[in-house]
Amino acid sequence: MQIVGLKLWQKCGLWLFILLFCTVTITLAAPLRHAISPTNIFAPDSTPAHSIYRLSIFLLEVTGAIFVIVFSLLAYAVIKFRKRKHDDDSEPPQVYGSNQMELAWTVLPVLIVVVLFVSTAQVIHRVQDAKAPDRAVSVTAVAHQFWWEYRYSQFGLVTANELHVPVSDSKNPTPTYLALLSADVDHTFWVPRLAGKTDLIPNHPNTMWIDPQETGLFLGQCGQYCGTQHAKMLLRVYVQSREDFDRWVREQQQPANSDPSVAAGQALFVTKACFACHTIRGTIAAGKVGPDLTHLMSRDTIASGALPNTPENLRQWVHNPNAIKPGSLMPVPDLSDQELGQVTAYLLTLH
Ligand code: HEC
Ligand SMILES: [Cu+2]
Image (cartoon, rainbow, N blue to C red; front, side, top):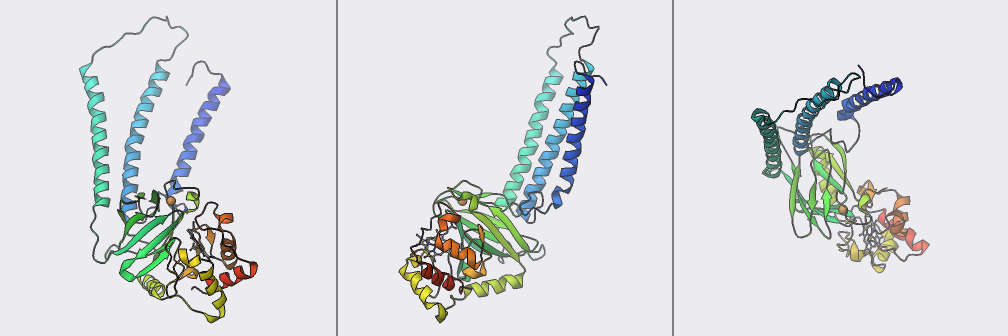
């Protein structure tokens, strides 16, 4: 095949590029479904995510087919009718007013758009209007700058940053319905393997649901720029077997441990004003500005997934939250080294 105006090495380069592009695309796309990315949108694990995944594959197929047809016709015309050496430079025959063709290129695209619209509307309806079965777990998720509060009213417990839900099997579905609220600005709940994005808007309750079919940890991220530490407002969803979930609920329902050996730290929690922002159930601390710390040590991470929950990190955090999350809404506490040790020791008993 000849491409006019290009030198031999340029032609070879062009073909090589096309070949390479195709190979890379195909090899990347094949294992995409199974890639072990915890936020892989091509590995859905919950009904809403499955519906969205199937819809996007359908849309990709339709638009991919259009691309291949249009591109092949274009390539055919460009190559077949290219300028040749012995052309006489006269104007080719001009064609005007073909009703058939004009109808075809108006009606076909309209039909395609209608099909895409209807299939999208169906998925939105199926996800949005699904009724919660009786066995559903309901959780109120409240987004704060820059962390998540989870209220399980039916179990009388509150936790933060790590959402626990039971696994749902298709014969006996136990989906989790989330009421989404915001304490300040607009945030978005987005765990790609479980569902699409839904915003948490002040004074405008939204809802969404998930029915994860596998146990494990599913990760996500606040999907809406909500302030300086938006990037460290991570989502962690722990999907557990029913027994594990029930055990977790029972543990979380307990009031906080009270360990006399850390009384000094517990007293500092009050005198240093921590209690004004944090709740520790079973003590006088009932603040609502920061995360509930009743069972702090049952969590794997602190500061909304920003750090693993280790004694060292906890100490660092209480020493200076701003060093870890600059702009975080926890003020730097005024603590001596000894007091810092005592407060941290107290926190470490909150299992
Ligand atoms: C003005 C309110 C306020 C005060 C006072 C305050 N905190 Fe906080 N605290 C917060 C906020 C808000 C967060 C969440 C920060 C984030 O993740 O962006 C937080 C997070 C934390 C966390 C991490 C919790 C988790 O699960 O991620 C710990 C531990 C903590 N605070 C301990 C303390 C201690 C100890 C004191 C007292 C020395 C204290 N806080 C004083 C508001 C406060
Ligand atoms: Cu956010």
